Length: 132
Image (cartoon, rainbow, N blue to C red; front, side, top):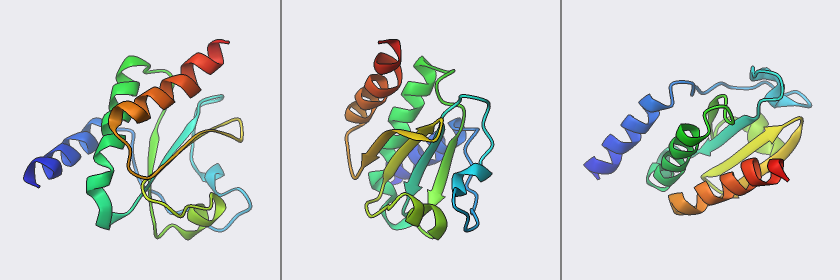
């Protein structure tokens, strides 16, 4: 348990561009998150009571960012209590990873997954599909 906690803290520190922000109720609540033009917005919907299931997501995101530093600009950690985003994206499972680019959902991964599964999906959807 202590190892998972340390890994989670370490992962959080490495994701220096991460922060949590409450969105207000708008028709497009993710507009509040600043991004560079054409850069995807990455949301990880988090449940404080199930942090152990999120470690693989942090690992995969760190590996992906390390290998493809220009593909993910920032990662937003969104609490289950952020009702506007949870409702907007119909979040029912935690963790849920959503990556949006140009107002389209490019990636949606839900529930517990191994880091390699998440990394493979990210590479398929964000690298291979854009190259074809």
